[in-house]
Each structure stands twice: as structure tokens, then as C-alpha cells.
Image (cartoon, rainbow, N blue to C red):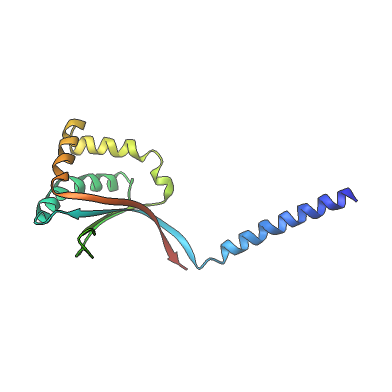
Length: 147
């Protein structure tokens, strides 16, 4: 009788696992790439200054990261803020998947040092950028692609 109970418990566990796999297969989407989205509020009258700065440094870093296959793509979206506390630029960086983040910091640090210069120069650049913009937040989001 005890063996029968153990067999029954194992059968229930197996059925539960199979049901879970079937439910996952019924999802109407598949998981796509991962996007890092940064929301930026540029100070009034400083948009062109900030965009020129991004074009001379951030773009170079992103192009090199794409060349090294650390990222898939990148974009900037601009728009009118919804209110005075809202963002007006959105920086998007596309990664292949969540695993692409493993060890990426060291690789990006090497690219930034090569493109921008040593840490002291990087800090000076960040201080300069803080005069023209404010980072409101950054999020990592996974694209969901309908089947």
C-alpha cells in the first residue's frame, strides 16, 4: 500500500510538470531581446548641446559595442514632455537577451576608456553632462513578440 501511495504522488508530480510545460507552450508570445531604456530630461535650451555631446561620445561607444556584438542596436527617441517633471529624450539600447549582461560591465568599461579616456576624463564629462540634463531613471525590459 505504501508503494502505491509513493507511485501516486510521483504520477501527480509528473502530471503537474507536464501541465506547466503545456501552459507555457500556449503563450501567445515569445521572449525577444532585452532593452535598457533611460529616461532623460534635458534642461531648457540645452537639447542641441546635449545631443551634440551624445553624438560625439555615446554614439561612438554604442557603435563599438555593436561592433563587438555586446549590443544589437541603439536608438534615441525625442518628444514633448507630458508635464514639467517628465522626460523628453529616451535612450534605448537593445541586447540579445538577459545573458548578454553577464560580464558586460568590464567590456563596456574598456570601450569607454578607449573612446573617452581615463576615469578622470569620464568623470569630468559626466559632471559636464549633469549641467544640461537629468537622468530620471533607467529600466531593463524584455520585448514580447506575438506568435
